[in-house]
Image 1 (spheres, rainbow, N blue to C red):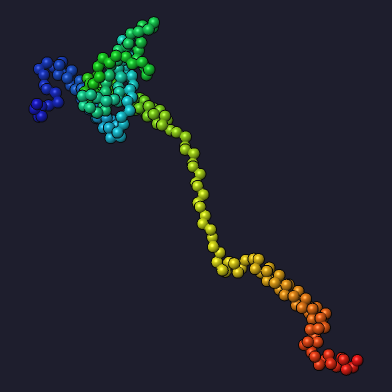
Image 2: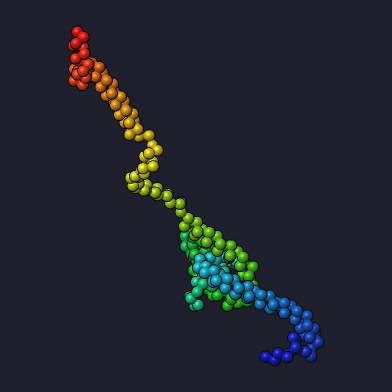
Length: 225
């Protein structure tokens, strides 16, 4: 391809030249749009892969009479990784209602499935507007999965009481605490007093002990008599 070639060639047919001149801006804007769509598809695919999202989701962007077109985030066997894909499903025949459209609970037969970036231009154009819907569907699916893993918090196990070793009181504590020893000193003191009283009484009421201790006083008493 000659890079120096003009945007559109010159034609001898003046009417054709006029038509080309009028169509060129349309053609250019259209292919610019296709480039933007392709960049968004590649960017979104790279973003989801970078997040490590391996949850499948899909969104129907065209519902026909015999088939339906979906954009999906799912595993691609060819590249062996998750990719944005274009899938065409046909209805599954069965039941009394005849052909049934695919749904979240009943899938139809896959007619074709290819990476979205490799799909025909018209598919990319028609599916481009549905990409936000696909992301919302993916978010809701992840929210549903996350909710199924939420569990009630575990009941805390009460801590076992620690075994307490017998405490040995210091002498200072024993000295500052009113104990039986203080009372026993009082009792001992009372007992001593009682013994002294008993001893005094014994000395006063036993003249024999006085005579043995003081013989002189006894002779005086006998002489006087």
